[in-house]
Image (cartoon, rainbow, N blue to C red; front, side):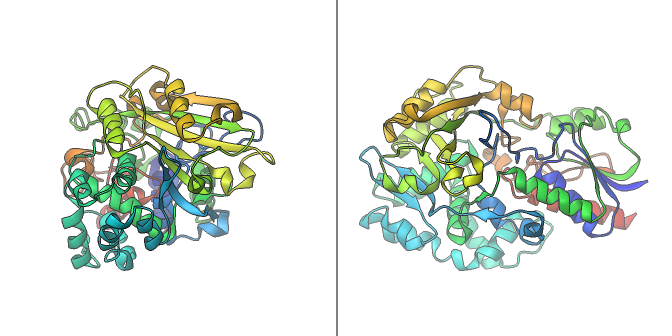
Amino acid sequence: MLDAVVVGAGPNGLTAAVELARRGLSVAVFEARDTVGGGARTEELTLPGFRHDPCSAAHPLGINSPAFRDMPLDRYGLEWLHADLPMAHPFPDGSAAVLSRSVAETAASFGPHDAGTYRRLVEPLLPKWDALVRDFMALPLTALPRDPVTLARFGLVGLPPSTWLMRRFRDDRARALFSGLVAHAIAPLGGLATTAVGLVFALAGHARGWPVARGGSQSISDALTAYLKDLGGAVHTSYEVKRLDDLPPARAYIFDTSPTALARIAGLGSYYERFRYGPSVFKLDYALDGPVPWTAEEARSAGTVQVGPGSRDIAAALHAASREGRAPDKPFLITVQPSVVDPTRAPAGRHVFWAYGHVPSGWDGDLTDAVERQLERFAPGFRDRILARATAGPPELAARNANYVGGDIACGAVSGLQLLLRPKLSLSPYTTPHPAVFICSSASPPGPGVHGMSGHNAAKAVWRRIRAT
């Protein structure tokens, strides 16, 4: 009998397996797809030699992850590559606000009225970042904070809606950039703890940047897999699990799946019936014959570029997708240009580029024209650079990854109490009514992102249960 079986070889499932194998347990991972990776894969989606990330591409949470930082993943081929700027937010006049590693440079890009406000917001928290990130990404409610004073200070600032925080800024340059940071949660800007979302991305960028993985996001998953195998763990791909009986006997079963899939496989009935899935995205991957011709110079050297002219435009686009049930006419775009810093991603002189806009759950329309019109506003001549494109709306995203129910790449709405309490209100969110079944996907704390911390935390819960029996 195995000690633990993990269902799903995404970053969280692989991390959970590694953490248990490091403790000397026998572990096997079963993955329905023919490769590991989940939301951290790399494929030739357009043309030969162009390596795209179907989902996550830039990794501010990955490089800052306490779980990943405690592993020797560099020995297994993981190398973080940093563009000159972690992120830029261009404006129609050809200027840009930036998220730089330097707080001073970032603040200066907002203009004199808001530079001091921004510095007062982030500078007290940045020196305590490592303790802070461990505290708010750790096992919730059961781990004593390493720095309770800083965590409390972060909570006081972060729990209110981001719209409250943005009243402190006088210029829309700062409000637009911060709105874009919050929009990574794919939820309205006025929700509970949305300030915390924006702060996490800002602090992560200042602390260690927003890198890409050399060769693509698949490198993260491959490094975790190689490390797991060296620890004695096994990984089985092309193995679809429909019920627990499909798996070998084990003391614990850990699911890197959506809550509804876990309930179906483990026979938990309606246990997760109140879990909410959120809106989706329409994603485009491009093969380009040259770099994106951004008007703003800062955007040309940034790894990530947010595309939305102002905070009201961003708020309207998010509201349309999440509240009005329609695709926005002028979508807010999150874009990543990995080949700015990683020449292995495309043939010499060519580039890969990634962009998505927000759309309702299950939306089956085509946002390509709206996305490209928006890009042309900030990068005139962009369409002339396109060699090929691959599009993926909610149905395609859900087909590629079963965790993306309705195309929800966050594996559950990141809004309301579910931002903090997922997948259920519980002191032990990784356990289920079945004593041997656990959940470790992005549906569990601390939530979406390629950071492995949901798997790390779930592994602790499994370890405690196994040790007690």
